[in-house]
Length: 453
Image (cartoon, rainbow, N blue to C red):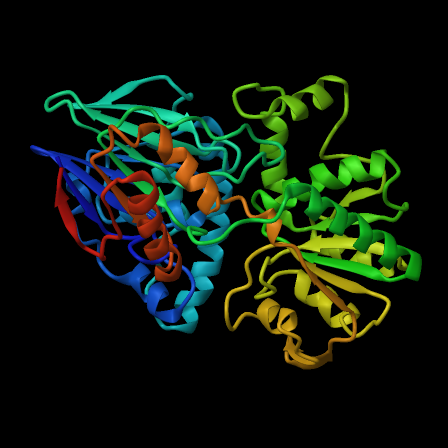
């Protein structure tokens, strides 16, 4: 077998790995490069392989940095099947359509050709096959099995075995945080010869999950009592649903005062509907969530919660007097409906803004988090007088402790670990920990580097 790294190599995004044996070629993920301008230019570069000769694509989960170039792959000649779990397929369609609009605007601004069209998305989805966890299937001489990665609903790590050579490799995709709400815990790593492991937080340790809920409760309670507005820029996928789950518990147990809570994100609302679709399925939700739902608790619908799907409904939020809570995209305040609310309320000393996700350097969210007293939003200068709070524990990624514990049971069988999907300040320290603590050979591949297994 031969493995080549065409994305996610010493960077977080653009996951794209080519596994070959004889004339069989399988891609694991085909994600968009995100972040710096240098990274984003890669999206318009030709694929370093011929899409026509790819037999299949295996998708670990639906985040855009793992699926975002799939329609481009189809546009450039791929006609094989794409495989994932059922929720991943459902999420992917919504996310790809949303991404197409953003990419089209970006292409126009930078005078680039369209990366792909809605028709390319539709054609790619026609060739997409949903497979349940642990239902083994074959792509020519490869046998494949999806395991629950515990990252987001339907996320997988993928075990691939060669029926010819007997060698086995596991691709982690993104592994979930410890005891994350809603989804089941990450499954144990099966015996394998090789492992490709993510390292987004390979050199960090997350704060306790209970601490984050207490911070959320205190901030809402204090802001509502002051008559202010809590602004929460949130990513539409997973972060918004986790927030709803925790707000449902806080509201129903009287731990936060009554105030309207708005979800002002069309994409988040559509993705929450997918969560609802699978809400009675024990294959995807953890026991605690299932118990609540079987008791009739609609965990994504509680008193005071309002969904603002249309532009008109979004504008109506302005007419609701504080106190109130507004959850809207984007997660880094780089666009979306959150900007309109920030212009209105950042200057209010009674209000607060809560960041629950990573804020990239240079983003508006990062400027606010770093203490800027004035920021430019929608062309106007806006004072930042409100309280600014950050909770890091909402990450859906495994930290260093979880990553090492996932590998540990198979330390005697693994010949080599490939560390990917992390910046060098995260991936390189994790390599040292894997080698020092587990005595497994590990490396962080370079872009385009290939290995014979």
